[in-house]
Image (cartoon, rainbow, N blue to C red; front, side, top):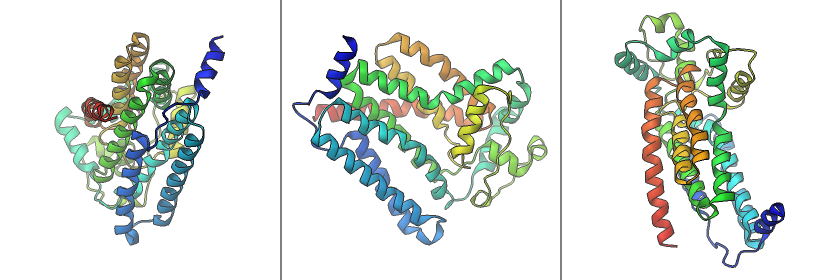
Amino acid sequence: MVMKKILRDLFRIEKNPRKNLFAMEWVIMIYLLFTSGMILLNYTHLDNPQAMITYRVQVIAITAALYIVYRLIPCRFTRVVRVVVQLSLLTWWYPDTYELNKLFPNLDHVFAQWEQSLFGCQPALLFSQAVTNPIVTELLDLGYASYYPLIALVCFYYFFCRYQEFQRCAFIVTASFFLYYVIFIFVPVAGPTFYYQAVGVDEIAKGIFPNLHDYFRYHNECMPTPGYTDGIFYHLVEGAKAAGERPTAAFPSSHVGITVVLLLLAWHSGSRRLFYFVIPLFILMFFATVYIQAHYAVDTIAGLITGILFYYLFFFISGKMIERG
C-alpha cells in the first residue's frame, strides 16, 4: 500500500505545472553564461576552450530537454529527474574551475604562510604523520567519502518527506556549490597535497614556502593519500581523487561548507534523526579534509564560516522567491 501511494504521487499529473526554469536551473544558467564570457575573453590563453564551450552547449541542451519532458509530463518524477541530473553534473563543474583559475597566479605560498603564522606549523603535514591507527584513519576516510551520498540523502529526504520545500533545498545546495566555484576561479589555491608534493615535504617542514607561479598549469601530481591502504573507505577516497582531483578548489573547503549547509538543512527539516545522523559525518569531514591533505586548516575554518553564511543567504533569497510566487 505504501509503495502504491509513493508511485501514485510520483506520477500524478500536476494541476499547475511550473512554466519557467527551476531556481536551481537559473543558478546554473547564470554561472554558465558568466564562465562562457570568461572563456571567450581569454580564449587564446586557455588549454581546452573548445571543449569547455562544447560542454556548456551540452548542458543547455540537457536542461532544455528535461524542461520539455517535464512540460509534457508534469509530475513529481520528472521534477526530481531535472534536479538529480543537474546535481550529478556538479562533479564535472568542479574540475572546470581548474581550467579557469589557471589564468591567475597561484596563491598556495600565501596560504601556507598564513597557516604557519596562525598555528606555528603545517597541520595538514603533522596530522597525517601523527594519526596512523587504521580504525581512526578509516573513519576519517568514511567522513570524506560520505560527501556526495550525504547530498543525495538530504535532498531525497526533502523530496519524500518535505516535498513542499524540495525545490528550496535543491536551490540552496546548488547555489552554494556555484558560489564556491566562483571563489575557486578567482582564488586559485591547489591545497597541501599538491603544494607539498611540488615543493617537497622537507622544505615545507623547514617553513620554506616558495611562490610556484604557474607551476600547476602544467603539473597536477599530488601526495599519496595517508591512511590504511587496505581500507574500503581509503580506496573510495583514492578513487575519487583519481577520477576528478585537480590542483584547484582548496579555499575555502567546499566539502566542509556544503556539509554545513546539509547539516542546517537537516535541522530545518524537523527530522532530528536526520540531523543527528549528519552531525558525526560533518565532524569527520571537518578533520578529514586536513588529514588527507586536501585542505589547509584555514580552508576548513573558512568552509565552516562560509557554509553558515551561504545557507542563510540562500535560505533568505529562496524565501523571497517563494513570496513572489
